Length: 304
Image (cartoon, rainbow, N blue to C red; front, top):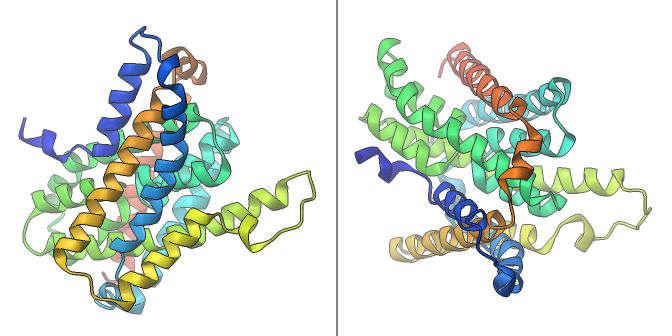
């Protein structure tokens, strides 16, 4: 029971939304509000994540650490996306799962899904997949760090670079103990800050792949919520926010993300999920194992 506190609020919101949406009760009366929350609240929550990112934090891991994590993110995203396509998954689910594995789990999936206008079914499935893997990490990674006698720095860097959700990173590092959590948070935040450039790249890719030939502009290239995300990162580093203020906005971000995911999940029916089949699940577990092992291998190879 003590491990229930480590479950991501986003995952709990997903489960709650799925339960309500599949309870056999008509939600027609609430559809306008749910649609509004699924679109607007999700974007607001993602934008507010920028207030949790401080550039000074990254100085602790140095250039070598940053470049290593950047390499891990690039290899994870491109590798998982390519492998998922080869595995027979659709482009939409492949991209969402790759983003969730590479950056920050459900938050990255929500952001990518919003930017690329992905279906609720694909977003919900991807969130469920990366959350299952992230939850497994809480119980699997700590024993491995002890079995391999990894240092706190190596353990923390591995956890921060391989575990998906921020809450799960903290939970996993907390079970390892010592200074592990410090290095895990720094490593994780380095991944999170890469969300903005990834979203810009994917948005540009989507525009370039469109057939309407619309002229690109700053507004079409960078959706408003991405621009606000970047703005909040700048604000967070230009001004010193008090701990209470930072905690407040962190809570507000989680509330908006949770509300958005809950609303989105109410539109997802299990019958639709069944049409996807078990292949994404089997692929996700396999990718989790391979990416985790590859990440640790890279960290050890560069001496972290």
